[in-house]
Image (cartoon, rainbow, N blue to C red; front, side):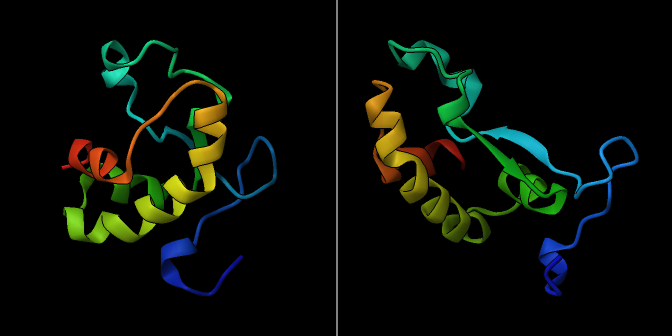
Length: 95
């Protein structure tokens, strides 16, 4: 586990591993804007609870770095799956 408090988590009672939550990088609520399904592994990322809450509840300026990193890691996978989105559009949907 990293020492930075933003990455602190806890061990799951069930799995005995760091607890993580799944998150749709492109929000599932935007399904009607895409030809392809969004509820697919290429669009789902695992996040520590604090990071997950940040993407849902923080101000946009506090989300931007994380969104850029996640977007850049998943962009090629999403394109391969037929889901194309720009970083600026992704940021707009997280406002």
